[in-house]
Length: 334
Image (tube, rainbow, N blue to C red; front, side):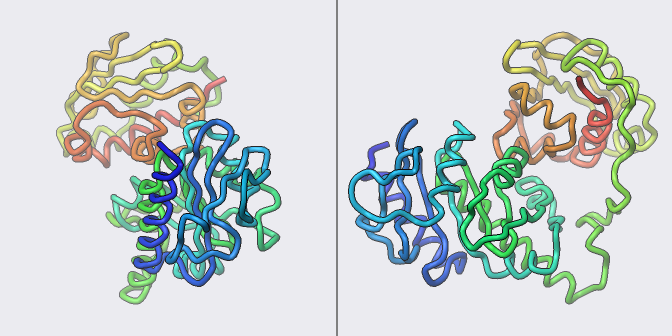
């Protein structure tokens, strides 16, 4: 995309954030990648709701401004994100009112609706000790698991394939915090209850002691054993009539396994991706999933993993699939 068009998008997103009360004063900054060496960044002391093309500066990944203008003081953070994530094409950082207030007194947010949990997952605050990010390493580490992070006492940061994706994550986070506040007014129910009343405070079961080679036959056999021995999944699968073909695929090698489910039980496994639903991802993402660093549903909605198939159809099996992924994550990989 041409620089002029990217600047136009930055201006539009800035205005949208402002109009939706997701930005205020001279707080926040927006950037968009131009190419492998440059990105556009809003200037220092600019108002996101009243941006002009002259307020947007070109910055090199080396941190130096190209041409005229003074870049936002957060150029280090933006540059490090672009250097660390080749898939990142846009970044939005803004000082959300409700989310910032929530994380002033809480370390973690568990969204209260299915939709929010699919898009956000659980959000944990990243500690910050300075008004401007001077150490981007904790931010980068958090972004490996989630495309949106909350910087303690410093606002939210979202990365995405485009600026609108970033806006949606920012908006979803703020709305989730508002919903949490309203829920507390209606009830004193524990924050450890999800929207469907499931208690998740006790954590997941312990991981199986042995470690397996990723996408090996031995790993798949262990997954099948755990799944078919699990009473909870059997109950959820029967109640929801979870009968489908679900394949998982490793992008780098093309190795795939096709699980045939009947009422929550795996009755057959094929070594192919000829299935109604196919979940594929690169090795680093699959490793993060099995290490419990990434929620598979969130990874799918944030496009870290690719889902082939009708999402609306598979979503009716959200409960058994959630249990399925919990069991998968008990099988540690080397």
